[in-house]
Length: 507
Image: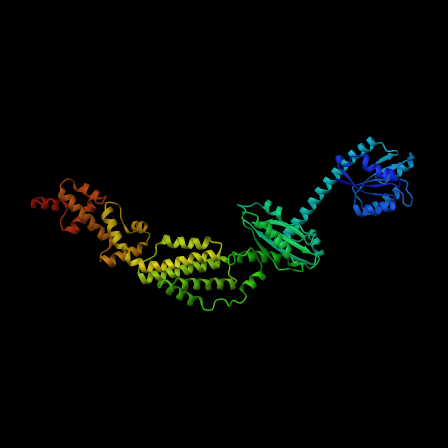
């Protein structure tokens, strides 16, 4: 609704105009009346009406004089002049002041309605133009402020920031797959205590709060969290320290980036700031022993399956990271190396490696996790399982026995150490050394013995030619089979067959 002020020295006109027209049906509402130009001018300044209907001649200050004074303040109001005189000079003076509607008394209701409709059209156009201009101006200023904060790009538009005394930046981090930027922007509280510039960058909405008075943002911050807590997807807030210089805005942005790194260490805190982190760590001394000492303690705890000790050691690791300035990547790499250190220790004393697949699973979890709390919970179980693995490993079937069984079942296939390494998820070199150490023979020679034993059975059956037997026991080349058979048995396959027939041994 557009506000209307009626200024006329005749009470009957002032009161009558309020009731002869259904103002709201035409998009207007009467917000006040005045009996002369002086009072009318005061109400214009106070009420800021979009439309003023005024008499030309009034005692003290006339309508023309009132309009002239109001125009000096760049007033955007529109006017309809009322007059009981048809003197053209009045109309000329009114038009020189930009008043295009001149209505003679007594007022014709239909003529006034026609004027109101035309005024409504003009005011709507004026409002649209003003809103578009304001949007463009706000967008231009915001884009320049964003460019200055993120990239230190200076421009004349950011001069508007110099009128404030203090600045604080808030980062609202969200999962763009679960919640949209529009949803977040919509619920950001509006407050008159701060001037705010809101912009998006990456998966974060930034709110730059500018203040002319030194006020705390606690209430705004709490309102922000209340709104975010209503969302199904959680939003985390990072709050910078307060700065008193425009030149420090880039530093505030870097602080938000650093705080987001710290969230890996403090994932349960909905609001994160250096002040909050300091209070959280107050009274703690940090890690009291060297990390090498902790490693040795950890391997001892694993061997003895001491869950409480494992938990305490990893708690000290967490505390060390919280006091450090390490990046998240460095912390994850350090934890991954800790796992590999413990695995190498177990392998060295058990002479049996952990499967590569299992190593990769553990490392991938560490690298993918966004919370030190969940990472440590996971590693508590991993290291405790290492202890169980240490105790139970000798109760399980030895890998060499597994290879022996597999070979006897699959001797006819293209077997070698490389294929066995894939099958059992161990390294090629380890299997070769392990097999030779326990069987006192290389795997290659063992495989030949198994195949020749099977070949002997087929030869005794008398049902196959030599080349057929070679293929059935895993030799694609019959000449190579012939050579291997003679080397192991001391006679060729045919000689062995002949000897077997002569002895009558077909079993």
